[in-house]
Image 1 (tube, rainbow, N blue to C red):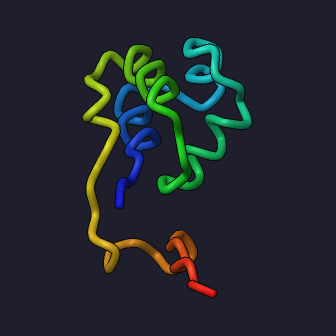
Image 2: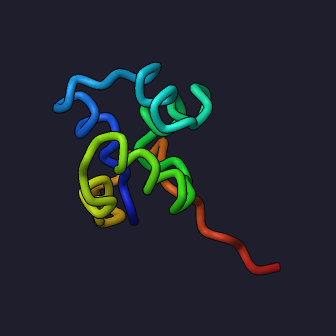
Length: 82
């Protein structure tokens, strides 16, 4: 499962949510969702825009984690076959 490292990288660069939103031209609400939930779905274009603002490769914003490492609240429930 992919985990977004936006909050960590932004904090390392002293960039807050409002500044990230403004500079990337991404709505504050979207930035806030990504900031608060590192497992939030984000488009590739959103990740690329954030990476550009933070001056890092987009891959620096992604971390592959095992399902066991994902907190229960963020786990995707399996799709049941009917």
